Each structure stands twice: as structure tokens, then as C-alpha cells.
Image (cartoon, rainbow, N blue to C red; front, side):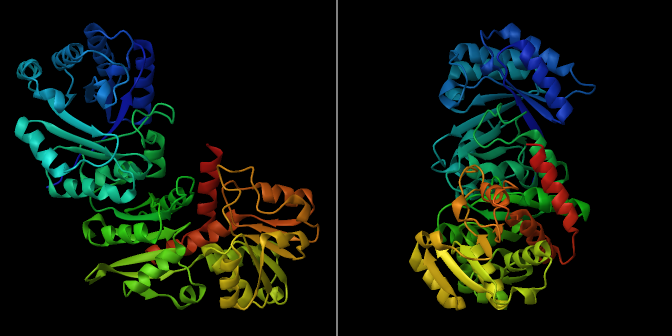
Length: 531
């Protein structure tokens, strides 16, 4: 059985009482459902200071809000190196002051003296609960299930809290399995960028709390996102055990606009679906492992993925090898940017998987609409495509289908040659850009994407007034390449237009229904302007 309540908890990590009071007010205004008073952050810590802070926190809101009091051991991430006896006194006093929870390190509970003090305090205030926590900042626990059982053996009334660093997203599945297989109140999360999804779907899996920071600067653990992001971008208030999951797979997902766009569309359609950033680093082996992890855990309810750098070819290969369904156009392109899982059709490996490519439609629509031409007008148009990855494959397929004369330029000439052979076009190395004489230039590399906004794949002196420059990078909206193209008097097509069109096509594949591209456009522009 999974607990139904997951508290969205904001850590209060202040250096003094006045700063803490301000943070408490901000957290409550933002919608925190629980506060964690990280008293180890307080300077010149005293028991009296903590008791006073608890009183302030309890009176700061119109209705009582649960409080966790933590005085973290410096060896497990505490901000200040306070002595153990002071930390135990703080937690004992917090119980006496009415804190609903106190968090003590599992290892420090082995001490008989510490146990006696904490047990005595709990006996005097039975409404308080003890969280026994263990953290691993290096990686996974050797055996997380065994550790979980040891905590409950040591103190059966404890709430186990197990938090470890996920060095790869595939490390998260041990945490998910333990949440799925256990019951009652427990807190199980992963730290780090790869562990972000564990914080977002904690409510789906029944973790007692998930933590979110007030802002990007006040995070108390690696991978914490802000309460605003959790509530607005990921609609945390609406997540439950039945929520169906989607996400963008790749190595550059944290600047992706896809989560905001798709979640806005899901909300508009009143669908219990959630779209996540899924940091799948590495190559084909790591990608395949992630897909296997997802498909054998049908209870996670993953139903679809957008695929980005560097996994578009890996995605197609995986579907082929899994005996899945590959859309004919996607087979021709040789790369997939969209995967769907059909839970109504279960194979030996899990739900039936299918591969699609919406980059083709998104790119061709962007070119035709921005240039105000028909597809037939692309015939014999001279086009330079920069790059030979997944996006390039889709765009080369579309342009050669329309009869354009395409030349592929790539740093690795052999890769450009291979792609050119598949689609019957020309190829060249980057040095040959000096003699570039194309009417349409399409950047299909990630050069110029945040955070490397001062980079460009094409030197400014190679841009001519009679060219059209199409940059498939959409973050930022206007890349350095596009700025320099405008300065040269050339026409421009931004990657945002392509993003909107392909995202709308993906939504249709995910849900079977249409969405309004204007909603995607408006959502992403709003998200970018708020940064």
C-alpha cells in the first residue's frame, strides 16, 4: 500500500532568526505543505534559538503546518560543524516544542546515550515522529533494501529516509523499486541532476515528502528544484499514483522547453499526464538500459518520450531490435525523435514500442511558412546543411524529397559522406564552408545552444545577403548565428518555429488528439521571459 499524502517540503536554511522568518513567509506564500527547519545553517546555534524559531513557524500561517527539525551532522551534509551533544539537544527540544518530525542520522542513533535522549523526548510528546536518515553523496547504497530494513529493526516507529546520489538516471530505479515494494511512511529520493525525476514523481510513488528550494541559490541538496518549478512546470498538486508519465530523453534536457510545453497542453486538455526532463547521458548502452528499466516497470506508467541529442539513432535502433513498430518515414530518415509505449499491448520486454519522427514535419513546415512558399518551390534550391546527426537526417530527408540540391557539411567528413550516400546528395568538410554558395543554410548542430550562446557554427563573413539562415537551435530564441544573419541582411528562420510544430505533432502521437500550437508558443515564451 502506498501512502496517499506526499508533503511538498521547503527547507529553511537561514543564517539567523530574521532571515529564517522571512524564508518561512516566502515558503508558505509559495504553497509549501511542510517546512524543514535546517537548524545546522543557523550561526551561533542554541536550543533557545530553535524553540523560538519553531514557535514563529507555527504562528506564521493561518493554519498549522507540519515542521521537520533537522540539525544535520556535518559528515552527512550539515552546514556547520556543531558537536553531537548540541545537535541531540536541539532535536530533543524541538520535540518538546511541538515539532511534528525530527530528522536524525541513522548512524548517530546507534549511540545508547542519543537513543535514550530522543526516546525520552518522544515519550513526552507522542505526536512527534522520528525520521532516521542516511545519505550517500557519492552514489548508490550498497544495498538500499537491507539498509531500509535495518533502520526499521533499530527503531520500528521510525520513518526511514534514504537519499543517495544518482550518477546516472539508471541509478534511480533502485529508489523507485523500494518505494513500490514498501509501504507506510518513508522518504526515498535521489540527489544530483540525474536524480531530479525522483523529486518530481515522489508524490506518484508515495514518498512522505519531496523537497523543493525557495530559489536556485537556496537549495540544500544537489538536484533540488524550486517550489515554483515543481508547482507550475510540473503541476505537482495534480500528481497521483495514476499519473501517466512522458519525458524528453537526452544529454541536454535541463534547458529544454518541452516539459513546460507538453505539461501546459496536458493541463489544458485536463489529462492526468506528466512530462519530465530525463537526463540520459552516455551512448547506446545507457539508452538501452534506461528503456529496459522503464518497460519492465509497467507500474511507472511511462507512455511516451521525445528524444533529443544524442539518442535519435539509438532510439530507432532500440525499437528495431525490440521488434517494435517503426513508422515508414522514420525508417527512411534513420532517426527517431518520438517513442510511444502501448500498455494495452504487452510483449515479453514490456509494452509495445513504436518510433516516429516529427522533426521532418516541424522543419518543413517552418521553412515553408516562414519563406511563404510551397513545397514545390524547394525544387533545385541549393541548400547547405551543417551537421549530420538526428536533426540533420530529418531535414535532409525532407529537402531531398522536395527536390532541393543539398550539401552536408560536417566536422567528421566520413559521417557527412555516409548520410549523403543515403539521400543522394553532396557532402563536404567544414573547411569548404569558405566557398559556401547556398540559398538556404540550415544549422542542425547544437552549436549556439545555451549555455554556449557566444558560439556559432558559421563564421559571419560567410553569410551573404541573398541567403536564408535557418537555425534549428531554439534556446535561445535568437542565436548568435541568427543575429549575425540579420546584420548581413539575410532572411532568418528560428528553431522555435520548428520546435512548436514538432511538439504539436508529438502531442498528437502521445494523446491521439490535437493541441493548439499557439498554446505551446505562449507557454515557452512565458517560461523564457521569467528566467
